[in-house]
Amino acid sequence: MKVLEVAKRAADRAGKCLMDMAGKAEIHTKETSYNLVTEADLEAERLITETIRETFPDHTFLLEEGQSTGTAEADHLWIVDPLDATNNYAHGIPHFSVSIAYAEKGAIQAGVILDPVRDEWFCAERGKGAFMNDKPIQVTKSNSLEESVVGTGFYYDRGKLMEATLNSIHTLFKRNVRGIRRMGSAAIDLCWVANGRFDAFFEYQLAPWDYSAGKLIIEEAGGKCTDREGNLLEIESRSVVVGNPAVHELVLDAVRWTG
Image (cartoon, rainbow, N blue to C red; front, side):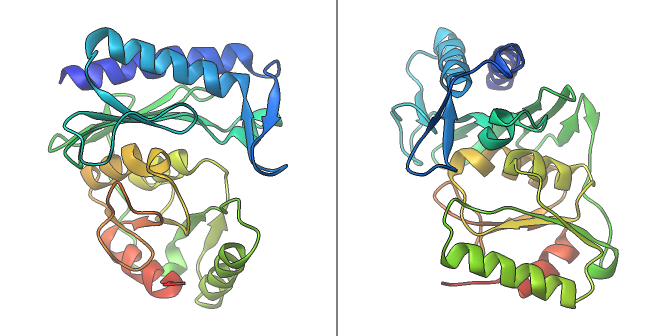
């Protein structure tokens, strides 16, 4: 699929940019002191959009940092997070990623997530399976919380979303989950569900560029993706609960929230 080839080329350019600028990029705050953007975010996003436009000049974009030009139902939409885990990156924590998804009229058709530190490539095309570094991947087969490691994340909100997340972590521990992990890059977390490092992941507030590529990768790896209320995960959703089919239901039962 040509779009996947272009997505990989764009992710490769962005990943090299992030590695080159690590420790040197100027850091700025957005609305709060803990919501950051760096020069590397902006340059990586520029490289991604430039690379895609070289082949698809008429396609539209949904961007984290720049000016978006398309909506969820666009005929040809690229959903781009040039640097997922900016806080990690800005503090020298070697755990961040590039995420690029391609959608047609609301349906994700291809996705690429690059972990440039580990040189791990996660890719999927609709109906063709999911891969890490060109090898097929699948979600785990665990069917209980007692044998499951669950990933989570915190949105920038320090109010009710934080409290709901902490309450859900408490619930999962009370139900004897094997472990909880908070790594800081939702895109990588989703990939780690797809390749079996995590059994499930949930976060109460995310943007489309955080999860769109990962959604397809998980589904192609045999997993299930919904929002925090159990609805089908769409481009315009704003929360994520994912996992292998059995553990997904257990986690959703523990963390379901309509607040």
